[in-house]
Length: 397
Image (cartoon, rainbow, N blue to C red; front, top):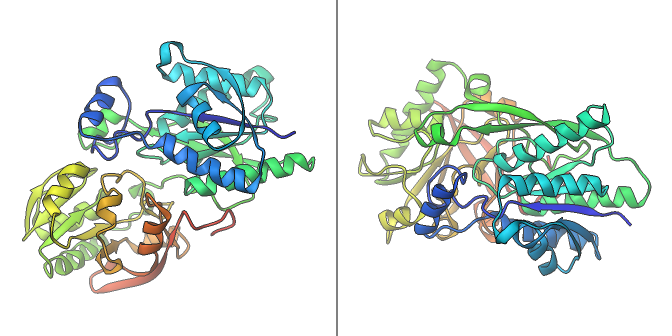
């Protein structure tokens, strides 16, 4: 019977709501817990498994013990086999690598990985070793489907949402049960230097490739940097000026990360952080690089507006590097409170959309979905559909 391999990084995503821009390292995880944050990966893995079990009942799962996957798989009602247990109940990147190595040795049909770019990087190292031992470039190794459970998730191995990840894995199992080979393609695995990112510096490196299902459009694609999709300086200046003009119409603004939003902040004459969440009130920055708790305090009892720019090459506007915008904050927004900005070049790279919201709950995704105006230049706009990634299937474009 087709079998799924499952790997969960049990601390992935904990740094997001805490505004720490990553989850690597014991000190970062301690600081995140002190700020009330919890890891996202276990919950998001459960959401993926729920979709998988619905599409492919009685799913046999091989996984790591406890938080590495066993707990989530049992909660989902799967038949579970444990291939590795972390000593003393703690987990490290080495436990990730040992679990995935054991899954490949057991011949699973697909590997479902819940975490972020750092987790994908560890998985890629195992696949690289396995491909070298086999004398082939990954041929015959099972495809990987990433459950977005980390902070950054710029690698092309991740599905747009946990639900889509579960459905993609079910498609692979269905093909295996029918004796059909699954066509794969190689997706880039990239990761940021988290220490540099916390200092507001983007330092991204390629760490290999992983095989992913080739047929469906449910994977998010890899991030395209500003140098490949950002547009000319004059065009960005016009876009920024138009955003600033609109921002003067309201007092309270929450600014998301990225170079496009940073340009708008400069045009408004306010200070902001390139990779954090900032709060502007009456033309003055009142909160820089805030976490979810501070964001709630600064916007309590008032109607904030939110300015975001989609991730280049992915079209994601929520759920990638801005988890400080948690469920409690998003529930207070009206669709008209979501303001978007992107250069024409960035939108062209997305082939006209749609843009995607990977919200904490399907209800919040539905709330923010619809057609939204996107500022593209001075008094220039495009109207694009915004779709909930939780509601999309594996054939969504």
